[in-house]
Length: 382
Image (cartoon, rainbow, N blue to C red; front, side, top):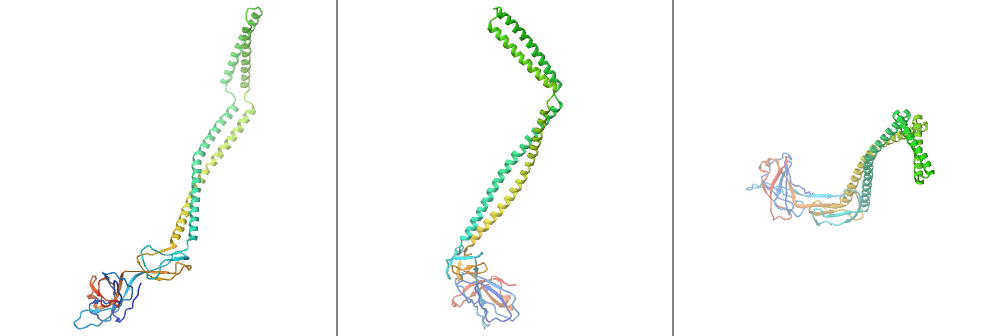
C-alpha cells in the first residue's frame, strides 16, 4: 500500500476514502465542515478513471468561505500492493525483474535453485512406482490364493474321505457277496479245466492213432494249459478273500490316511494366507496414498521455487539478489496495481449528513493541480 499523511484535521472528523487515477494529493469537493465530535465514519469514493502514478495524495483542508458551499479535505491515496516472498526456503537462482518494470499476472519474477527439489520429486516418484509394483504383486497373490487354496482344501478333503473309506473296508474284511462270487468263479474254472483235460487226452490218443493232426493235438494242449492257469488264479483269489486283508495292507492304508489328514490341515492353514495378503494389500494401498501425497508435496515445493506475479502491476521494490538464501518470512519483491486506488479522507461528523453513497466528488492532486478527477462516494464507515 502507498500511505499518505492527512494534515490540518480537527479532532471531530470522520475518515472516508476515494479511488483516484493518475494523480496524488487529492482535493475533494464536499459539503461544509463542522465541529469536533471524534472520528466515527469512513467514506469511500470509487473513481471512474484509472490511476497510473502511486504517490501520496493530499486533499487540502480549507476553511468555509463566503459564497461557497464546498469544503476541502486532505487524505491519502492507497494503491493495491502485494509484498511477495517464496513459500519455501532456498537459494535464489535468478531475479528477472527490476523496480519500475510492468509485469503481467503469472509472469515469472524470480526463481530458486531447483536441483534439490527435482531430486526430491524423482525420489518421491520412485517410491510411488515401488508401491504400485508391490500392490500389483500382492493383488496377483491374492487372486491366486483365493482361486487355488480353497480348491486345494476341497481336494484334500476328498482324498481323506476316500482313504478313510478304504481303511474301514480293510478293517471290516471282504463282503460275503465277493467271497461267494469268487467261489463260483473257481467252480466255473474247474469245469472248464476238466473239459480241456478230457479233450487233451482224447486228441493225444487220436494223434497216436494217426486220426488227429499234430496241430489239433497242440491246440487242445494249449487250451488245457490256459484253463489250468485260470483255475489256479481263481483259487488264489478265493483264498485271499477267505483269509481277509493282510495287516500290512491295513497299516499302509492307515499311514496314507494320516498323511492325507496332515495335508488337509496344511491346506486349511494356507487359507490364512488370503487374510494375510488382504491385510498386506490394504497396507500397501495406504502406503501408495501416502507416497502419492509426498510426491504431490514434492511437486508443490518444486512449483514454489518459481515466484510469479499475482496480478498485473508495477514492481515497486526488489530486495534480493541471486545467491542469497531466503525463507518465507522474507519479502523480496513488491508489486503494485495502479489501475484502481482508494482515496481516504476524514470528514467532520456534523457534515456527514450532507454526504451520501454514490454522491459525485471532484479530486485534485499535487502532481497535476490543474486537473480535476471525477469520483463518487462508495462507502461510509460505520
